Length: 336
Ligand SMILES: Cc1cc2nc3c(=O)[nH]c(=O)nc-3n(C[C@H](O)[C@H](O)[C@H](O)COP(=O)(O)OP(=O)(O)OC[C@H]3O[C@@H](n4cnc5c(N)ncnc54)[C@H](O)[C@@H]3O)c2cc1C
Ligand code: SF4
Image (tube, rainbow, N blue to C red):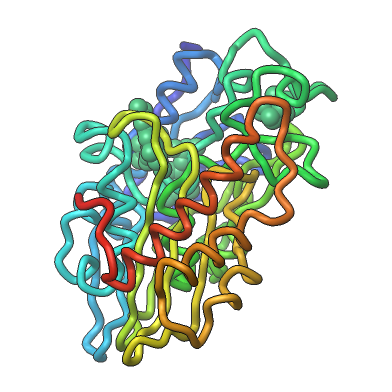
């Protein structure tokens, strides 16, 4: 690991002032489950590491008084706390399921919401110190005609074919969450989680839209009366790995009819994919094996897989169908 100066600020303003205007020179440290890996692999070589661990304001889950409540989750909240929270389980089960399936207990006890949303991608070329691809300053993507079985299947228009690695992201987007961000001079801005991610194409871009000197403070969800949600991950193994494909869904149920349907796919593109056409297929209908299957098939339309990952296209339909049936309480495929 390259030597660095370690800072432990006690206010967000101090933390922001220690961050630079360029990516890579200073890095924020939350639980460290991703950053330390990257440093040990010489993929991240910051001169300064700015710990967020003493910023008390970043932690905790706050439930507002209104019914149904507005729930604010601090960026420093551990994934294990999110997975176990009773109010989130009641109103946002897509999120608690996704948080409960991340890695293993050690990762969930150290990893934070902010770190999960801002973690770097898992492309094995990117993670190899010796490979200088597009995201490290060259003009070549090695995955395009290389080992790409875990890469994107929605690839049109993307020079870099990573998949966004966060499984909390599709759940939060389906739940209509917003992110609060703070930058220099105390300036705050709010961004919809649906607009928080971007497809990076160079070393000067990250997988999200934060500037190098902006900190994610918290994420807010307005719970919905009658709101139902679920996240379903197709995985090679039950723990300690990322899913192959994920679907997160949310909707309101009145009688047996659904409205306000959101379907969001994870691990199929450089950003989470909002499958609006698939959602409109099921809007106003009852969720049955048939309607859920049709929505799943619609969600997979437009996929343009690489040489080794066409198998993921079929998994999209499976994940969407199972997430919809789970959220509607019609069938339980998975329980954490
Ligand atoms: C074996 C294994 C399996 C995993 N499986 C999954 C999985 O299935 N699904 C999944 O989603 N993830 C998975 N992960 C990733 C894991 O969720 C992340 O490593 C973790 O959430 C990162 O959180 P952290 O607090 O440790 O972040 P850190 O490692 O401290 O930081 C990660 C990045 O986020 C930035 N950052 C942190 N906090 C903020 C903030 N408040 N504002 C701005 N930037 C910030 C840091 O600067 C850094 O770039 C897995 C990890 C491992 C090791
Ligand atoms: S997919 Fe992206 S990170 Fe991976 S080799 Fe290609 S450019 Fe690099």
